[in-house]
Length: 101
Image 1: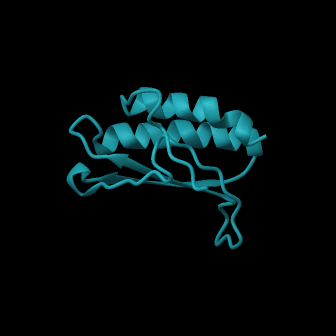
Image 2 (image 1 turned 90 degrees about the vertical axis):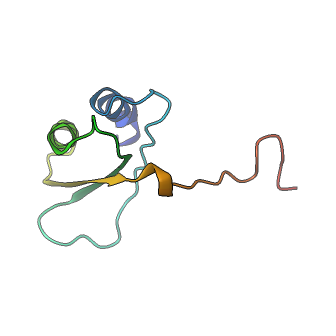
């Protein structure tokens, strides 16, 4: 059920945060420990831009919450964190064209 939501969640992120469609990365992971009444937790991390202000991010979080609440009939806790792009690093392994063998 959760995996079927990825296109919808990705679209909300792409449109709401004005990102390229290939950029939203949605990771669905079961939790081993859940505190409080929220059975679903969303941690939204995004590159900081002037367009992605608190109002816009709150709207995106609300849209995500609506979809998840309808699908799972559960309380949802969502948080958004802007990341300074100058400190963002990423590594893909193995590098393109190389295998681990």
